[in-house]
Image 1 (tube, rainbow, N blue to C red):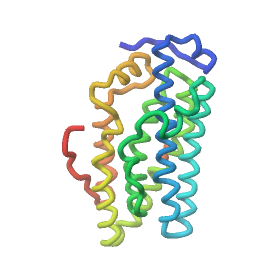
Image 2: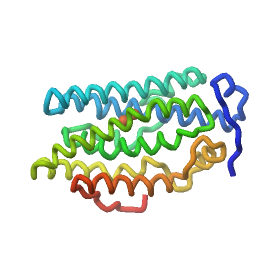
Image 3: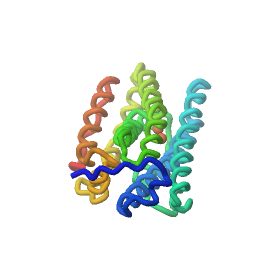
Image 4: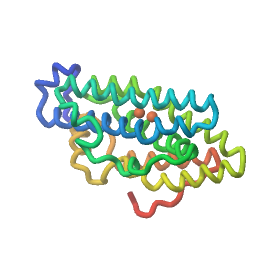
Length: 235
Ligand SMILES: [Fe+2]
Ligand SMILES: [Fe+2]
């Protein structure tokens, strides 16, 4: 069941029901924290691994945009009255497990942009019709950049798979990272997700998103002759 209220501004949020306010705060915090983690753990270190000046240039742009996503979500959070320390890694939410592995190679970064940014696209897509318009607008502004990151992953994958060796290294990176990605979408029975959908803040269940993600990730991997390892357990 969907409760149809629309909150057009941060000002209007003050008079929204508490459950709605808490739900949008959780989403803003989670985006702010994860965007910063990603930028620190993957995108910025990847600049050093990028093999050519051209690749470094584009990687700098990706890193700049990921830091920018954090900045924008955090700015919205500050306007909403969320304490700043809850929107940076370390003090607030536990990070997603994928952020616990420091980046070691260029191929790992390409695999992450190819597959993890696709997960990010699905998350942002789900906010494009969010009942809290400042968050909806932020999702709309962020989307073209997330698409660029996924395209970056595709373009450099296409480059790497041209050689046997490059393809083997990229496949090894996919094998290492893929098992962690479907859990991005949260638990199957998530109380948070129920509340997000009740208020029309998000549209889909975690499982619906996960199934769609696995399908789209499989399509994109297949396009470059890559395979996704079987998942150990139904995520
Ligand atoms: Fe991002
Ligand atoms: Fe991204």
